[in-house]
Length: 128
Image 1 (spheres, rainbow, N blue to C red):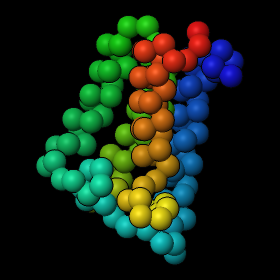
Image 2: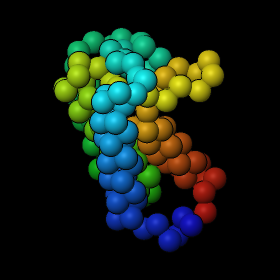
Image 3: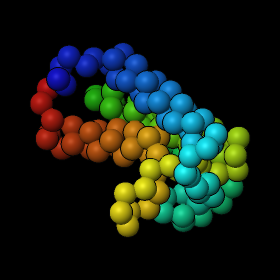
Image 4: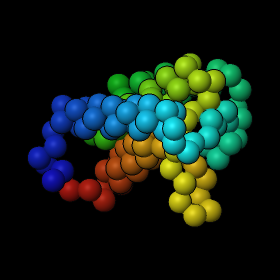
């Protein structure tokens, strides 16, 4: 699977994830169950400029990383979705709740998945 998904396919996958997240947010805002998370992860607050810093950091990480960076596109589009929420709603729309785990959304999943895959590639846990 890793070889099949080339660099541009990871970008397309990130865009699909971004669009899926936007559609889910649209649906829950029309009548579903959700929360507006004004913090960062787990409700932690890091200030108003955090969103911009996260997007800029993800963008710089994409271009500064030598070698394998395709997985970071998932994180980039996830971060972009959450920043868009903050601009539109004053916080991130979280709509997935599983047990005692904090609320999250598809964009959060993309961020974590992209960073985990990138880290696994850096330490040699993913095949070429």
